Image (tube, rainbow, N blue to C red):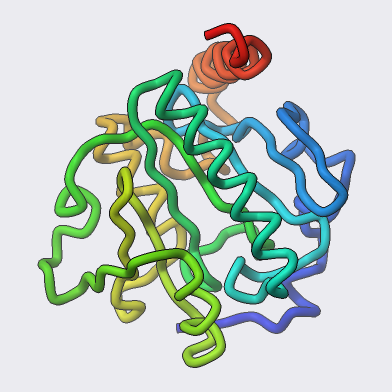
Length: 211
């Protein structure tokens, strides 16, 4: 499995450019993070949390940056639960990334972990909180993380591949055509549907205090 140097991952990174298409639909900005609508959503309510500084994954964050991220993660979780009724998340910790800059993906999903990792329980390890990702990254320089509701897992990295979680959640949503975001960008019908999902999320986010 090929891993990339930090210098290579920074080259032409769409998450390092504040004018990038990836940041087209902002929800919130802080000193260190962007919270945005995914421009290629897997489903309605698809949110990205992206650090402004280039990091490969949240396991590489400093403690202060991680704590700021965690506050945003909880805010987005609360919003998704209140607005859409469920929440899930994932991050490719250097494995499965097609953009080599940390971006935690969050969206409504209430299915089973076995729908995402069908290889069996031996490929899953439950973790108690996201702080464990920092230790895992220090130890192994990689991880595959996802959550459904309050349950969190890491996945055996031996089965990791590009778009690992995107493809699997797209299948779980019965929209496999949304897994490959690069191909999705070329499909005007899919992008029209995506824009409708984005407008729905923007409207609900902007009216969240009165929901």
